[in-house]
Image (cartoon, rainbow over all chains, first blue to last red):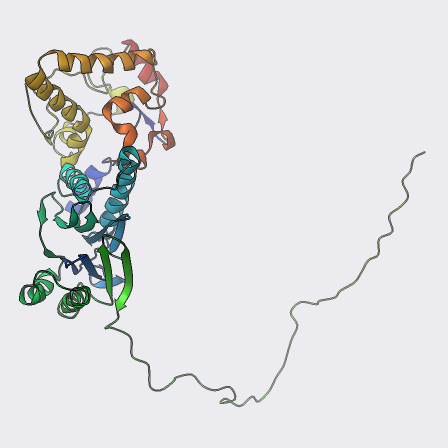
Length: 274
Length: 144
């Protein structure tokens, strides 16, 4: 507990910045944050849009989470896929989800996708890219389905099909060769699945399963682990030995604690009221 | 008249003459209380975001005032500044900052939004003790 000169302000605290730069200069860097090193995609089909993501989170060369959720809830009609630093994407989407709820309560209307996009881009610009969150925002509002990408420094794109993350090129190659406008729901989901699988198999930062979210004007379907192309194979032989494989030669049991149970009947003495 | 969208990352001390946070009654750095003065750490090692975030609200307010003046005339920023001053004055001359000023929050639009400062390092939850004596001395103008 130190005594301060002024009341601390809320928000981020930069007190350790000097110490951290000094330590990095001496060779001891900061611990690597968990990144999502990801493939996330979105596309607009005939009635709405489909978002897809893989489920691997990495911390450097190690897989930190084999089945993480990268498609975050923002509003009943909007979902957001996040790539980049895992904590940044989760905290950013949670904060914007809360801001959207306050906005919805204040206006009394369903939130528009541009509102969420503007909130996200203004926040990310304010932090000059230090918040490493690359997002694909998709939702359906009064004006139809909308799909946006938001980069960590705050720039945005509005497109009919998008991919982000380290596996974005693998996924985009699938989209570029097979996307056409006005796909049906099944075609859209299978194209998204193929794009994510291209990222899973061709990019080291993406792996495990495929998550899909389908949003249209009536409902939202969250298809968690829609495809599992990386299931572990069942081992053919079991390494467990059956009971009785090893012969018992001698048995000796020694009680370490003497357990004795005695029941004491306690007759309460009569009260002394003399 | 600056229509600056975002504050600079360097604390601009060029245009303003400011007395140090740690000054004593002579106006110099108080070595007795705060140790030797390290100018290098004051100037070079600041995080690029530190000043940007500290000045963000003030810069946005200034931008709004300047745009209002250009669009509607001098009366618009004067009215906005008057409302702010009334709300600050209504709280009374308190020495130590207590809860956030509700009127100020409503005028700034902060009552209907949530930001990092509302749940990260909330001042009410901090375990640091504010040195009451230094704060009082500075507010009253008596620097020892």
